[in-house]
Length: 221
Image 1 (cartoon, rainbow, N blue to C red):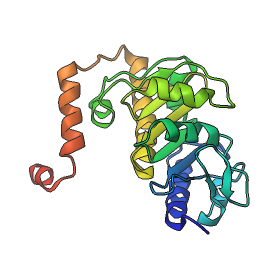
Image 2: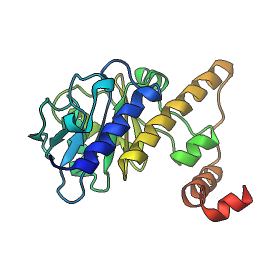
Image 3: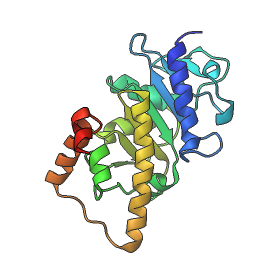
Image 4: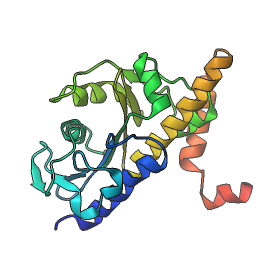
């Protein structure tokens, strides 16, 4: 069995999706790319999350061809590998239909930077891409076109894709975009959220991305 460590990492990340309430039944998937071989490990198609194991993860090449696996690869594999082919720094991709973020996607609305949490994690508005038909490279093309420098994108009338320089970073973005979407949706029931000034967005993003969690930051609280 090849890519044992990456299989374990991708399996663990997939199992976090139901834990954080990001998926229903068998929907949603996580993949990771091996930087040396370029091969991709992804969730198998149609399996319940509780039945996932490192052994039944599927290994595919960058064109979606199965290299190793007893099950078919996720039906979203073509979208994942398109992202990997066109964004070489990306090492993890997550796809969900998480409720609140997908509600924004359903109406074609981006998520504005009206919270420091959005500024911290994403540093910009979370974009909403145009509708793309499932199948072929269409979704991958639209993700690459629309995501820009963000690590999350809403796919109009579909769901959410997040990317990262590791599997765990892509997973974190998926968790955070849903949490943020819920808060923003709640705020919209009260009034119109105010977007943070550009300088505050930049300052919060810089602080969170470069100093949060460091020894120096922890001394200051």
